[in-house]
Length: 336
Image 1 (cartoon, rainbow, N blue to C red):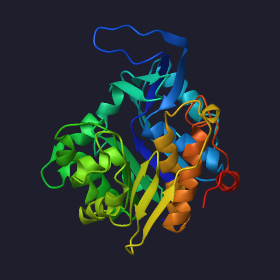
Image 2 (cartoon, one colour; image 1 turned 45 degrees about the horizontal axis):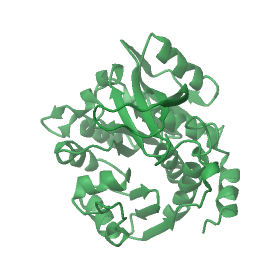
Image 3 (cartoon, rainbow, N blue to C red; image 1 turned 30 degrees about the vertical axis):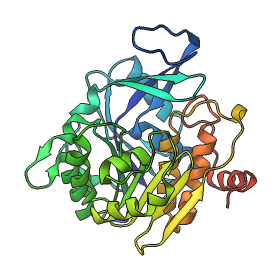
């Protein structure tokens, strides 16, 4: 099979967006500013929509589970705007996942309250991977997919089993996780990394996985530890690119051991409308570079541009520009 395109498999979520004057303490009240927003969310929504904005000719498959409800209809309508997104592998479920996203107007920090509905039905046997034409399978979020987080005697987890099966069929694999404290990282993430070609996660997730401190309690980034953390991700089995992204920049280690560090683009406060979905936009740009055979550094530039552009939109994807325009934006903003 001639493999082409990118498949995003996993959480399909409607984000219900609220901005508050400040995030309240326990038992306190905080006023909601403006009307409630709604946006596509979750890896299997954001990644296809971001990629379709970057390249309208790239074959894209969206794989997940949607309910027969208003939230599911909303997400189907988002996909239908793009002819190159194949939704034929979306399975029917009970209730569509949703997340309450609370944005603090003062700090711009976000807090998430997630309901995992139909996405929890996905497991390693939900889809016939042998019929999937994609060159890259991007799956996640680990820790937020009940079925794929279940244990598997041979591979460790159902997610690891799925990724191993995809590799045997000739696909490159990529994973993403959600930020969470607790011991589930050490139980659920390493088994998947043994069958992962591209690992693209943020600094908080990376330090949970490998135990290398990347963020001080006062918020300072420990950039001097980044290369060690990336090396440990590779040691856990990541075959090609280990990538960590954060507000300060993007860091990566490729299959030859070449280390790349790129700063984020400088944006003014009025250029930032919402930070929701910026991590997935970064993943989409980076994966596009991987699909096209680019060097890691060039892929990180596109990922950085896509993430910065996503910040200027009121949803997760509509402000992202086609590849050439995104890279032009990167240079205009002082990217190197």
